[in-house]
Image (cartoon, rainbow, N blue to C red; front, side, top):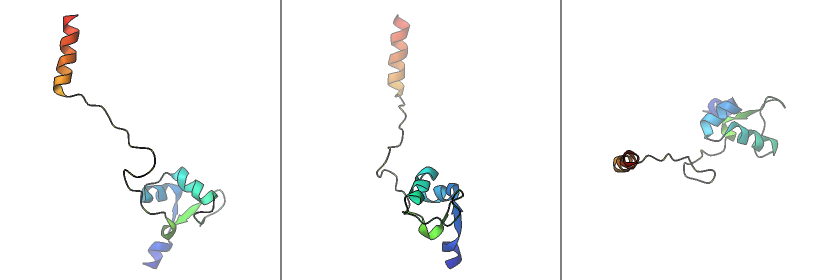
Length: 84
């Protein structure tokens, strides 16, 4: 278990595991909130230092929602264009 926690991850790998973007994780390293387990221009993060998993619906930018009109709405739009 210790080997698993001590494994170092690239920013891209850490992003996939944590749900945060690689840019955000890089910023956390730059500001000293996460220890850089790699080199200056090749940062790595130990698995044990990853921030807690990001919860959907938490703070941050909301997910994009797509507008899908109902079949009645589509029918009304089609009929209004037919009458013109």
